[in-house]
Picture 1 (cartoon, rainbow, N blue to C red):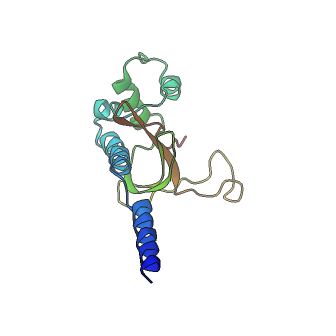
Picture 2 (cartoon, rainbow, N blue to C red; picture 1 turned 90 degrees about the vertical axis):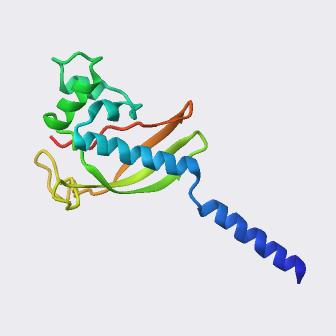
Length: 156
C-alpha cells in the first residue's frame, strides 16, 4: 500500500511539473504580448528591442527608408504597408522546443475589440482561402533575452 501511494504521489508531482508554466514560458509569453502592445501604441523602438527576426520584408515594403532605421520601418509597416499591428487577444503556448523556442497560437483584437479575422485575399474565395483567426508566433531566448521572431500578420 505504501509503495502504491508513493508512486501515485510521484506521478502527481510529475504531472504538475509538466503542466505548470515555467518562468521562461511566462517571460516568453509576456515578451510576445509586450511586442504587440508596443506596435499597437506606436512605440516602435520599444517593439524593435523585442524583435529578433529579419527585416527583409519591412525593407521591401519601404524601399525609400534607410534599412538601418528600424523605427521608421516599423512605423511605415504598421501604418501604411499592411502589417496588422494589433493587441493580443489570447496567446496560448503550443510548443516549447528543446532548442529554446516557444511557439504560441495567437489571436488578435481589432481596434473596436472585436476578434481579428484574416479573410480571403486577392480574389480567392473563402473555400480556397478560409478565414483565419489564429496565427503562430515564435519567441526565442538568446543570451537571457526573449525575442519575437515573426512579423505581424500582413493584409494587402
